[in-house]
Length: 163
Image (cartoon, rainbow, N blue to C red; front, top):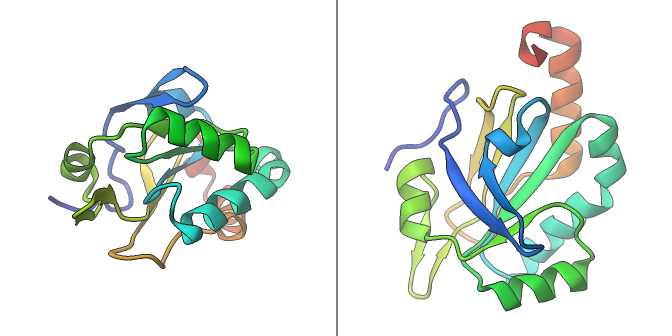
């Protein structure tokens, strides 16, 4: 397992979202900056808070041309219930193979029960890593305000980052 660093291409992974769509990440997010979130599960209050925060920031993210996708090991029914409860409008995937995702991205895996620890990536419009945030436990995660600020900074100071 190796961690993804700035400039690395985000690995290809397929995600089935609660709304039935299948997304090929990062291709489905290409052309805009993007955030890919791995969350521990619907049971995690910190994850719920993070997902709610990204939903609340939806207009600011859209204005900055930043797309969001989230993924966990939860089953379809649990994910559907979470999307409904939090009124999430971005794609939220379910049924992630924690070990396979960890092998591709370096995300930490809780051994028992098995789930992905909170991990977040900011991708440039070409699908390359801008920032990777790895947590080995409940805390330490991306927040939407930081993502919007970072993308604004990159657009103002690094035109090549938006090409």
